[in-house]
Image (cartoon, rainbow, N blue to C red; front, side):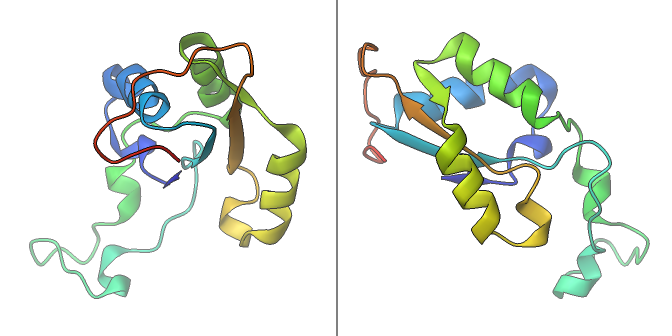
Length: 123
């Protein structure tokens, strides 16, 4: 499960991020990342103040937003995980407004060989 993390990483790390998720997941990945133009509340609204600058917001930290389709293409190009439309639809229907357009569920295909599982264990 990774929710709203990928957009905080530089573009050059997206492929490694996705393949690392796949290596540590046995069957399922639930994923979302803020799409381009996603609104974010200022960090001070969450009880944080960044260097006393009240104009700083989480948008400033969204260095590399991609569309859900672009993330899906990375998963399907680099990993044995495939988009699961039915479970994605169910997850989006039960999620909050913010995740409705970006939340996705991927499953490891039956014919794919499982990759090595990291110390954190499989999902």
